[in-house]
Length: 298
Image 1: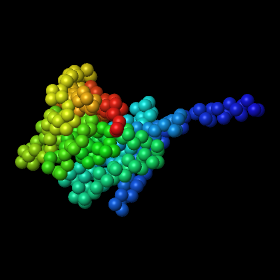
Image 2: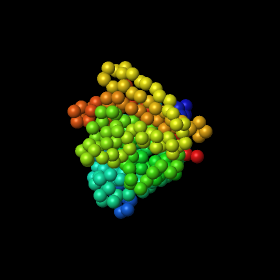
Image 3: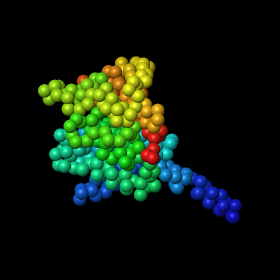
Image 4: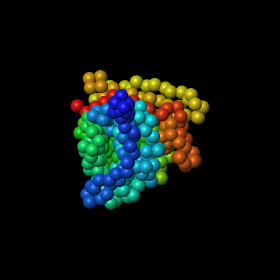
């Protein structure tokens, strides 16, 4: 029986821990803040893992964002933690007129304390915390790049930009990525909301790239790559890459020609006449993670 017992012990030690998905909460400003944590299966639980915080759009929540931008297969492959928090009244306070903004919710403070919780509870790597978001969550990602850049190594925003005249601006170099469709009816590519007296309330795609390229001291002229329509869905992609050769920091923009208010490689969650089409000529999760993993805080 002794050899069998030893064999059992070996397999018990060698077997990877199963992935875990947890509904959790922390209290911030006397408010219960909800989030979902996904921890990949592990063989070595002593390793510090990178963390991606994934922020939903308006009317979403953490549960829907985990499915909408599904990083879980990549988390299993490359071993990182996913955190999908829920905003107050299905919204974030990125500075615009959302329920969270009207209630004065401090979402920067929430994400700051959430990072601390994940690092302390799940052995997250404090030097490799990244934030991505869609729409309202992408706008909050931009705000965090300005106001929480001491804790975040890079951000990526989809279907989003940065609101003007909200009291926050780039103040420290940080790697940035923006993915934006030219046929986005909710966050127009040029930043002009025609339903509000044709007023530009946030930066257009080209302007936000130049704003961050200047803040990151990148070369003035980007390297441009054209990605054709290889799937026949009527979309194509232009990649613009601004680089700082001295620091390695990059500002990358993806223009989805004929793309809508959608997550590239994701689902057509509403009809095209409401949000525009999804491109399948890129997988946003793969592209964003590929960008993130090249950076860490010093």
